[in-house]
Length: 226
Image 1 (tube, one colour):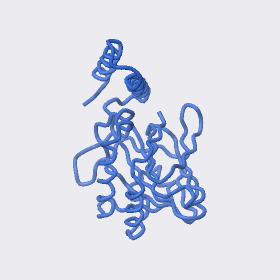
Image 2 (cartoon, one colour):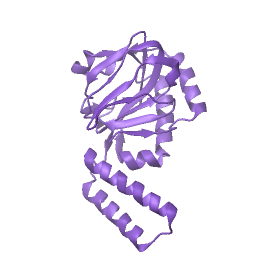
Image 3 (cartoon, one colour):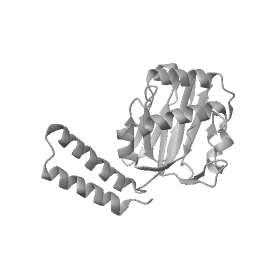
Image 4 (cartoon, one colour):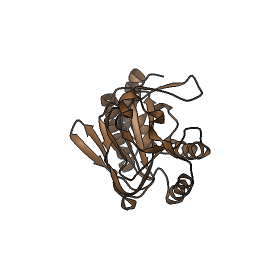
């Protein structure tokens, strides 16, 4: 499932993020790349332990905790702390698949990457190129969102970032381990949850809605891994 999560960060939070990132000390993006990804990666990245990365990462995680759309779609169990990258001067990231397991630095915690996430911090008109191209079951999907918006997609997907030929593309990227590791099952649960919420907005709770909610929770109970 490829899904846009709008306005994870509001305009004020986006502006604060830009100000922090523009004064930060950036490093080569290969500091977190696996062997295969390193061959295709050409960008800058904020060191994971930098004060800016920790502060902005906390802001993003707190915002996501308030997003019902994100919670319903992702069913998060563990989230890898947000990372930040910068593409400029032709920077790009060739076709690759994200590593299956990520270990949170300085801890024994390992996160299976079920879902990949990119949160855009630069506005689309602030740079040229820099499209996120994701291969899904319906073909190649091009993603270039407004600042503060985020896209989530299966970490099994082939994806790439096209060269940034002008301006600067700032974004956050990270992964999560879902309670339901199957993208197909997550999609079914998400569709059911959205349908139930839509019904509730149109009619009062009925026995049928209660029964459907029970089916949703029983499926989640059967499929969830905690």
